[in-house]
Amino acid sequence: MQDDLERILFDEQTILARLDELAAAITNDYRERELTVIAVLNGSLIFMADLLRRIPLPLKLDCLSVASYHGGTKSTGEVVFRQVALPDVEGRHILILDDILDSGLTLAAIRRKLEGENPRSVRVCVLLEKRIVRTAEVNADYVGFQIENEFVVGYGLDYMERYRNLPCIGVLRKELIAP
Ligand code: IMP
Ligand code: MG
Image (cartoon, rainbow, N blue to C red; front, side, top):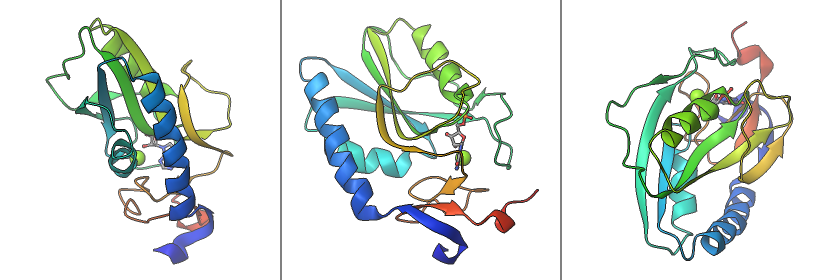
């Protein structure tokens, strides 16, 4: 699998060291608040597991499943909610966790949907943020790493459902991406 990478951007040790910092910031900000984490499946699974174990606060965890991609490397803009029952967000402080902020369409749609359920607050935490002009207006409150506009895989991120179990994050070789 690692041979399919053009280059490695962040190895496992670098990722985990950054998660220590992110977790410390989140722990500090939510010390007096009842936190509900909503993880966006499937890309945030590994990030979520490693991050939450570094946050020593009582919190609730729920997951949302959406589809915004149809196999390629570009967002189609259409966000389909696969889960019928939405997590219970009313009156709670919500922290949305996602793998990557790209066009922003996915997170904007999720945020809009959750804000309609009367939460106390909504914040967004992403492992990666691409340095691009976003299609949808959405900001992340906590960002692991900023990256250039390249297609990356590993540590939860996939290309056609592969590479999620790579322990590092890297740029996929261009010739492996279907035109
Ligand atoms: P957005 O709606 O364009 O912000 O896309 C968000 C989703 O697209 C993410 O949650 C990922 O699943 C996927 N995505 C965007 N960029 C990448 C990438 O570089 N590698 C893998 N998945 C990506
Ligand atoms: Mg994906």
